[in-house]
Image (cartoon, rainbow, N blue to C red):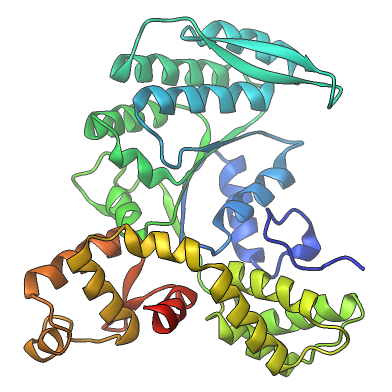
Length: 371
């Protein structure tokens, strides 16, 4: 029997639970050359959602997916964008040949791969331009490619907020906005650091102000999600009641990735019937297996701020700056202010209904157990 849960991109209709409204909206925006910002906390399935939309319109549009997470600089961004565009059209011979003449900085090279019995694309750097000059040239090539396409074009930038970390970010952002607004294509901007993404698109002083519809992914309706989880188990002859599906979902705070993760391992640990005991034992195993990953996150925080971060994980509060809270945890006001500012920016802390807390319950549970 096949494990019905997956941690990879959700490609099939049966792997998706709901998101019908978002899928239809994004398809309409993509086909009408309109832009969208897709944001949520980490592990909510933003990338899978956009790829699902692009898969559904692939026969009627050209779709480009460009992951710019941890982009090292403008040159690296230009290379990633150039590759993503040329890769997306390499089977459209006429357009590919034209586009190859637009990208002056890179020569596309197709090489035969005997293992896959197909061709793979690589780029050979040929030009001398760098930085903002290279960015302008690359975006001009993008514009010409779109103009020569007979089909609508949708380009998705994943982890778009990382563009703000590169050298000359402000100038790059201004150039991007200036060129992209003149291109007759649809652009999707995906981001998991909500505070940065919101500032990019809602701050009047930023170039991308009001340039796209903002679509914030919320948690899935729990009734429908519980039935989905129960059906996944039952489809493979391992019985799971809707009640226990609720329990599994609530165990990880209804976060889609963690539901898939806990479901996948609970399936492995279940012989016949899913029980709350098996879910609890599986969850404990997952915390142990994630010790290295979560440990690296915590170690990346400066020591004094780490203490404040751990305090907020263990004791969420609506008064993090109060003398009583600071004294209880031996933290200075400045340290707490810096911790909240930095870790909200990184996407680990949030203010929910006035309460400051970690937005990742599994990480919080790890801290409760191991820190």
